[in-house]
Image (cartoon, rainbow, N blue to C red; front, side, top):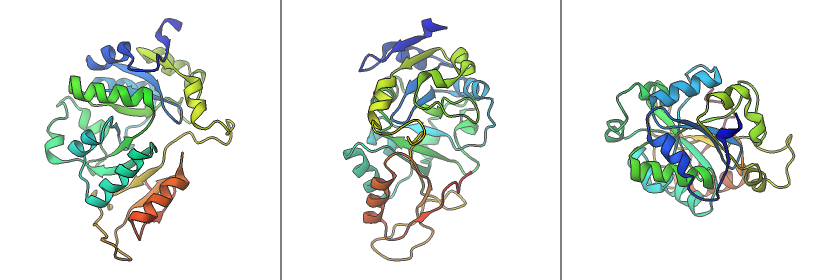
Length: 259
């Protein structure tokens, strides 16, 4: 199996571009919080679910390599845009559940991808600043190949990978076309944490109501509902809550609310 494993070269990994720019590719890539499976179309998504032996009801995770990509895909309002901008400028991992723009939906390949990357409300989790190896790759795939980047944790079902490539498990290793290894990069993000205390995921904030409609702008008013809901704590949660409090006077904390 070892021939699939390569050390991250510190920049854009050409082998990964080749695999994901073609149909059905599936790789394992390092992020700030551990390893993920990356795919770019329905065939790849199908292989991911098969590799993880998981059901298909989770919100799809869409990796955005630039704010321009985010703005072209997801419905935003000025406050949500400001939230993403601050996290972008401070290099903080953030994922928000947002509705797709109608014209962006039309760009999704008509190959069954849609049902695997959105929930029933037509929302997905749009993530930025998830770590250099994948960010560079997502940007390249979008700008030069017109391909999406979809993500899912590279975990054997029910187990974390603990930020080590060895933790992705034999099944995922055998299914992937390529595994980019960068254990030291992952460790460098939370250098003082142990395997038990480190965050294995990013913060997720829901920006939609129960029907998948974008929350209203608050414009400095109090008690505006529905409001943003922090539904999953994770890396840099303290920084994220501080920034959210500057932008939104009302937001909720409901761990695990989505699932």
